[in-house]
Length: 226
Image 1 (cartoon, one colour):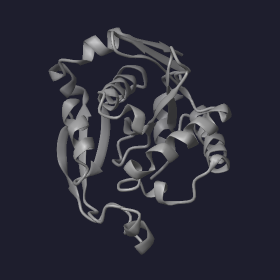
Image 2 (tube, rainbow, N blue to C red):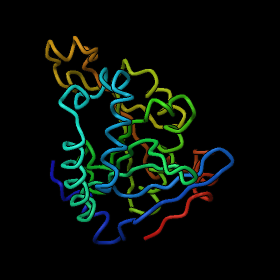
Image 3 (cartoon, helix red, strand yellow):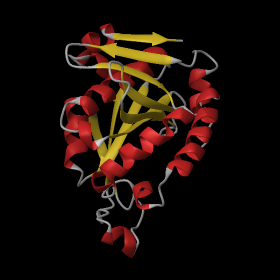
């Protein structure tokens, strides 16, 4: 897949977001590009959450440390500046604590005006509605600020928590893709990696937005700095 997809969206017609803030009665958040200073906090959150991440994230079954996070962050910053992929740290404004990682990246489809959502949440903040909220914010960012006419999200058909998040955001199930995910090694299986390799593929397109009862309310609580 060509990595020019997101460049056409963000750089030709739209400015790359520098920061997104969101506040309601439950959350006070800032989204910002990854920084080298995040490496320790991200690695700590990964280690804390490793048992939850390993079943569905193949990268969680690799060697993980602060040095690897620094390398990833440096690559992420370059991709962000070029509009290829937007990796965000989601931070609690009041405490400064890292809550989760959120991404808008190249889509699975050939549509040059599409982006794909990805995320993982620190174990400390699961089951609090945060993943659903972040998915909604990323959806609005893609459609209203990056000029998308399609936003995609996918997950393993065995990942019930992710399916619940996606359904809560009213994404439309478009189909399932067999043998989509990495064939696990024996070590990955030992670590708990899911052997089900089928992906549920969901999307929203511009015409679906009128049916999203949450859209306007969430957007009104966002501030996007360009």
